[in-house]
Length: 262
Image (cartoon, rainbow, N blue to C red; front, top):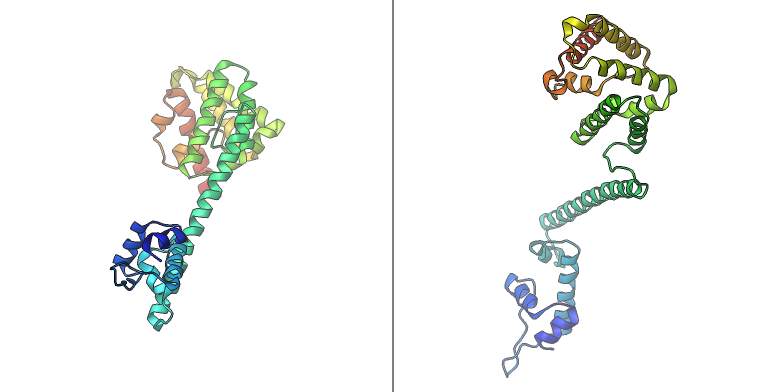
């Protein structure tokens, strides 16, 4: 058969056949008296095997070794190593695709229900959205939205702190949720106050936060605190308000002191 017939039978092109000739993967066929190359059935089978290996992900540089009928011990080890490496790449890609599939499935479910698309676990996002919708005041609602954004940033950063996984359970518990929202209300009321003029309120809020933390009702009453504690942000960046920043500073100091003595 001629080169065109060979290429068509193998589902490829004459250009590809000539490329395989140049690489030494496919032997040059004998020429007839008229100068035309004449391919035999063995050439077609060889070409189809090359195409099969290439479509399976085997690099052309490894094809000859894989197809060799006889191999030395070293060549055999190389072939096995190459195939195992290729398989590892495929498995890694499969794992990546599985993660993407799971994320996209979750996004689609949220979109179908008219929910905002979020990187947060679905239960947590639903609980926070519900808390925002039922907030006692616009200021508390804005604070809850900030908490939600900070939690999502923590998840997206890959450093998922403990309060992220426990937050949905906290919001689902009536007592914990009420305590958390009460703390947020007091927190919001401090905004704009000078620390020296709000000492009583600051002290009371810190005491209630520490009590909630001790009882486990609120694992970390403010995601901002966890972000500062981990060193991801400066306290001034996360809590720009002076009175609120003083609350966080005292809370973290006392939690750290208690941890050091436990």
